[in-house]
Length: 346
Ligand SMILES: Cc1ncc(COP(=O)(O)O)c(C=O)c1O
Image (cartoon, rainbow, N blue to C red; front, side, top):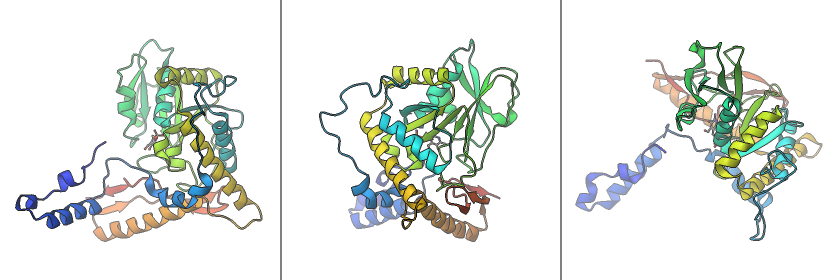
């Protein structure tokens, strides 16, 4: 991971003089005032989860989860049934994706799911096929596509200027997009093109839910939906059985499945959120769920960021549209979930 490592770089020459109090002040000032734009870490919902610890935690005993297998009747045999049910229920109540009768493939974060999808969509190819995405795109797509110098696929650059569309390609559509927060659609329409939708941020705290997505491969992750990046749970909702089977094969050969502890933890958290959403829907007094909380926190942060940026007269921030959110039942504004949106106008 990039970025400065706190005191190492924050040290002043005062240590040579033994003036440690000065060193601490400079070091902590440096740490507190630094915005690290190199990578995001979604601890923004931590305060919420601290409050919810008692109701949303699970205990896993030493005798539990010894087997490699989670459900041998399922194509994705390492997917815990609890997690599959929780994923389907949550997408149902949020209304952001059709998941009911689709295949679900779980991975170690959506990063592994992405690589499984690349493999599944290219495994029959005789030559490396291009993986493209409209710029600006998530900065990890190119290195993930090129890391192992695969004979099946390689990074092909910006989809907006891709001119080899008569041959097979994979277009990654990230919506809302990291880094610019825009709502995206595919930009290429070639006869042999395949699509992967990265919907990591298509949750109501980040953007209005305006339709139920129903694409061939849709990726989601606990890292962004609930803020549990450390659990490393991502999933794909897949229409075609053969693609889901190949994705499962990739994860089987890559890591022989996904930690059951992590899956059970995330299942519990998704169930907890689902229950909160259902209570908000019923006549019971609405209880704050992570989507309401997240929406509020992100609104506040964006407001502050806009105030600061306005004062600079040097930078400006993208404006995002307000739309009716089917989940909240009212017009809401997009509040993209990472803070790399300052665009220079000098
Ligand atoms: C658009 C997008 N997709 C995927 C990921 C990776 O998510 P995960 O933590 O599930 O691997 C990120 C993380 O920042 C992201 O921004």
